[in-house]
Image (tube, rainbow, N blue to C red; front, side):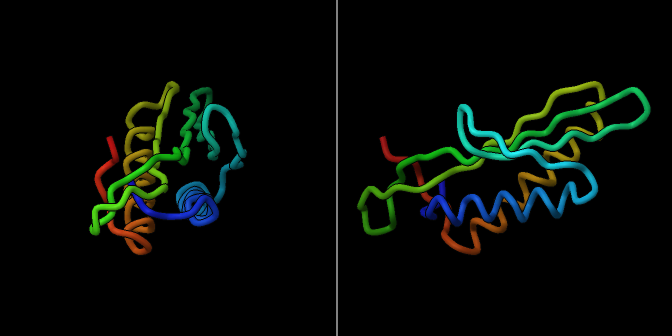
Length: 109
């Protein structure tokens, strides 16, 4: 969970998706959480990778509970090897970009 704004979370998603899937069409999604979807294809196989920003509350270093976001990446399709690899790289990009703005904090209970 990162103590970042919705605008920051969205920009992190856009940048990471463009960096990872620059040649594939990227589609905005809104439900159940805002994010983006990319589809990679090879011959008759395809794989969808979805990254969303999930609103959450976390405990800051001073003990206060603050709003922020965490990222969720899912994938499905007929290209599991490349789909898993691309999903993992996307998770890494999201984590690095978010950590540059805010350290990861534990979720509030």
